[in-house]
Amino acid sequence: MIKKVLVANRGEIAVRVMRSCREMGIRSVAVFSDADRNSMHVRYADEAYNIGPAPSRESYLNIEAIIAAAKLSGADAIHPGYGFLSENAGFATRCQNEGIIFVGPDPFAITTMGDKITARQTMIRAGVPVVPGTTEAINDEKKALEVVNEIGLPIMIKASAGGGGKGMRLVKHIEELGSMFRMAKSEAMNAFGNDAVYIEKYIQSPHHIEFQILADNHGNAVHLFERECSIQRRHQKVIEETPSPLMNPELRREMGEKAVKAAKAVNYKGAGTIEFIVSDDLDYYFLEMNTRLQVEHPVTERVVGVDLVKEQINIANGHPLPFTQQDLKQHGHAIQCRIYAEDPDNNFMPNPGVIKHITEPHGLGLRCDGYVYEGYEIPIYYDPMITKLIAWGETRSEAIARMKRALYEYKITGVITNIKFLEKIMDTQDFKDGKYNTHFIEKNEEVLHKSRPCGTECEDIAIMAAFIDYLTKMERIQPPHYTDTLGSGWKDFGRKRNVLRL
Image (cartoon, rainbow, N blue to C red; front, side):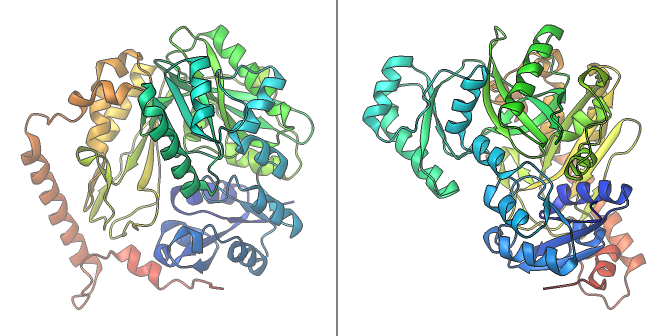
C-alpha cells in the first residue's frame, strides 16, 4: 500500500494532490527548483527536496533528480500532476524499473495515445469516429498539397507529439499552405523534439468537449461525464464547465460510451480524458487523449462527487473502482475560471511579479485551488496560471451568478491578472445563453477588451486602498528593522522552515 507520495510538480496542482494525500493518511514529498523555494507546495508537504535550477529542463524535467529525491525520501509512489513529466513514457518506465509506483497509466498507453497519429489509428480500429484526415506523418509540402486537394480547405496542420496548442496551424487559403506547414514542423521540433505533423479537416464552428474517464486494473472503466472547454485563447482553455450547454442526454450517453471504448482500446488504467470536437450539427470526432489528470478536473469532482486524485491513488494501489457507470450522476452545474498573471489588453502577455495583496473569494459553492500568497514572487520561468476558481450552483444560471460574485470579490495587486476579463465573459450574452464555440473570444473581442464605466480610475483607487492595507499589515507582523518591503509574515516564517535538499 502507498504510504508516501512524491509529487513531481509544482504550484497549485502539487498542493491539490497533497491535500488528498493528507486526507488519506499518506505522507507527501515536494520537489522544487531554486525559483520555487518559497512556493506554497514546498511548505505544505511533509518533506521537500531541491532538484535544481529554475529552468524546467534542469529541475521539473530532470528525471534523475526526481528519482533521486524519491529514493532519498523513501517515497513508494510518484504522482506527476499535469504537464512536465506527466505524459512521459520514459519517466513512467523509469519509475517501474526503480520499484516506484507511477500514479498514472502504463508506458504503453502513454506512448500509444501520446502520439497523435498512432492515437488516430488506434481509435479508427476501435470504432471511435475521428476527424477526416491523414493517418500517417506528412513529410513534405507536395504530399500536404495532395491531402488538401483530397479533403478540401480549411485544414489543421498538427504536431503528432503535440499538446497545448503548439505545432498547430490553421490553413484557410491554399497560398498559406507552404509557410504554415514549415512553421508547424519548426514549432513542433522546438517544443517536442519531433517535427512529425499530420493534417485534419478543420471543423467549422467547433465545440471542444472532453469526457473524464477512470479505469482500474480489473477491467472496469467508467466515464464521469463531459466538460465544455470551448472558451480558449491560442488553443489554451480559459473557462470550463459541466454539464455542457451543448449536450443532450442521448449525445452524452453515446459520447460517453465511445470515451470508455477508447480507453479500453489501450487497456487504460487510471484517470484520463478523451477529447472530442463537436460540430453545430452535433457530429463528434475523437481529437486526442490526455493520459493524466486535467487542469479542469475540479468541475467534474464538484458535479459528480468523486475525488479524482484519491481514485488515482486507489487504482495505483490495485483497488477496483468503487462504483459502476449506473452509480454516477450529475448534480448541479460547475464552472471553472483560470486566473492568470497576464495582461489581456496586451496580447495576454505574462505578468510575473510580487503579490502585494490578495483577497480570495469565499462562501457557499466556491472552491479556490491556488498557490500564491501576499509577498510571493511569481517566477518568470513557468506557466502564468496562479489559481483555479470553481463555482457550483443547482442550475447553470446560479453557477454563473456565483462565479460573477466570486470574481468581484477576488482582489490581487502587484501583478496584472485576467480577473476583469473573466468577469466580462460572464456578462457576455453568448456565454449566458450557452451558445458559444472555440471562436468565442475572437467573436466577442471588442466587448471583452472594452473599458467599463469608471475605467481605470476606480481600479487605481482600489489598488491604492489595498496597498495601504498591505503596508498596515506589514507594520503589525514584521519588526521595524525588516527591510524587505515585499515580504510577509507567513513568507518570513516559511524561510525558517527546515527544508531538506539533495
